[in-house]
View 1 (cartoon, rainbow, N blue to C red):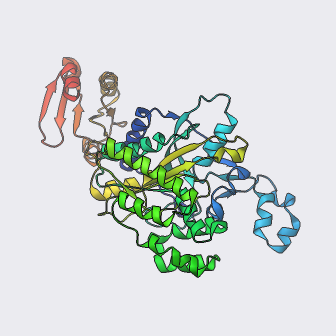
View 2 (cartoon, rainbow, N blue to C red; view 1 turned 45 degrees about the vertical axis):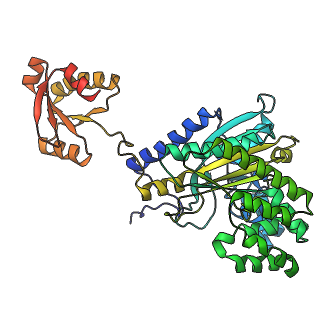
View 3 (cartoon, rainbow, N blue to C red; view 1 turned 180 degrees about the vertical axis):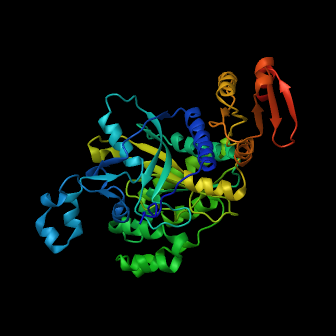
Length: 456
């Protein structure tokens, strides 16, 4: 019995229309990246495991796809771990490589490896797929594209200001209005952890806090308690859960909450600077919003943290995010190189544009004219015209077989090709082409020049 074809959960096939729509988003983002001075790079789809492991926290590490060593990998495995069925001990001896989890850590590795070739500050963009062993659901896939832009070699807060503008530029170009760019600062989270006596549990604190919009306040408190954060400390957090109002009023509230934390005060100063600059520069369609519960749960952020929310009319998780990482390259031996970057979630942006009907009708450039095939002589004559049309950037093709006329016409209709050209003995003798409009049914004999000008 033939095997029934299938694909792994969390992956997808894309038809021609979907690919065209995805390319529309890619092209829009790429154009904005290059307008802002970012240069393209690419890195391998898989990295050495040691490059990735330990960079995303325990939860992130569990979602990394490991690649089994080639050959008889078990013969070289840790036999004790194998007999104990201890996967944590066994994995390093049977898997030395892994699919990349994101583009940021591979980028840090790239910077360190190529530091002598790079002119700093280095502005790079990268549009490539990443893989996560996550539970598939709406807007969450195991294989998906990230579109990243990063700057390394500068600790200037003007970079954060530019990234907010870049988000605004891209979503405005996509006609996706009503997007909210949420911002927080890791120093503020560190300051809060300090104030509640949980500095030694910063990661547990931020990972739990980052789940607030998913599981709610009470579940977050339960998780914090389970991680060893005291009830007294959680009580001190209460103003954080109810913080609201304008950017300025939240900053004022934070000043009173963090008045004993120097680290927290630095975070407030940075947020104030960024907000003041954006207020002066203005945004076209997006809104900047302070969200002090935003943590993003990743170990490497040290300053500003970004997350982008779709318009409120759409039920969707974040469609972008990023932040400042002051010493990400330090884990690979290059100290004191500050960086900041953002990412666009292509697949979620696609779903949002689809739901709101924001893809332009012309996004998929179809074949504009199909030449009907009546035989070898007619086909050769037609291909000479098709060559000239294609040189003018006109999408044209010849039906490959001299099939029945009805079959060829049906093919044009099913592919939504608006025009067909018929070439027979008469047309070849007069050096003309019979052009038929597949919508109106009208047809005319035209010269090649007229045929070209019709589609230009």
